[in-house]
Amino acid sequence: MPSILIIYNTKTGNTELMAKAVEEGARSVQDVDVILKYHANPKELQHVDAIIIGVPTYNHRMTIDIQNLLEKTAKSNIILKDKTVAVFGSYGWSGEAPKQVLEILTNKFQMKSIASPILANYKPDEKILAECRRLGRIVAEHIR
Image (cartoon, rainbow, N blue to C red; front, side, top):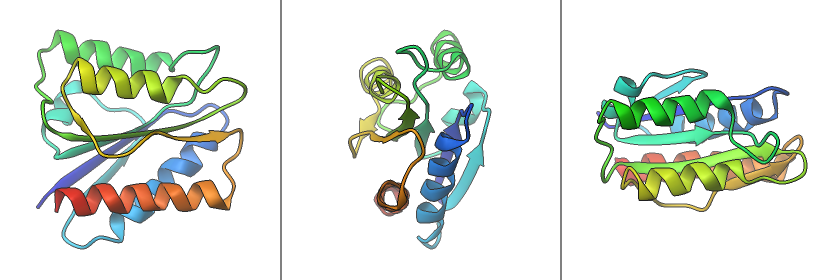
């Protein structure tokens, strides 16, 4: 069965709200295994068909946990080429982190992005949460 790993970081809970909406959308598609995690290790990334990362922006950067995950994945020579990827995240004033993460995943790891990052300024409203559910569904349908 195809599988999706949704990894997220959060400090205020806003990105977590988005992650749960992405999970809900992905679970709406039958015959796809959906895993939601706050932390993951590089080896977990190689055993799924799609990876969706939720990363908030703090001080114009991604969180250290997501940065460490990407660096450890690169150092471990984990192959992610051609896996499906999507990214989302919340921010207070700038919002660069999801774009930075997507750039690393598509350029360094040669993953295939099927959607632009979803960004929420502070707490996601219902419109943003609906976009997150749609993102989860689109990724799940794509790998099924």
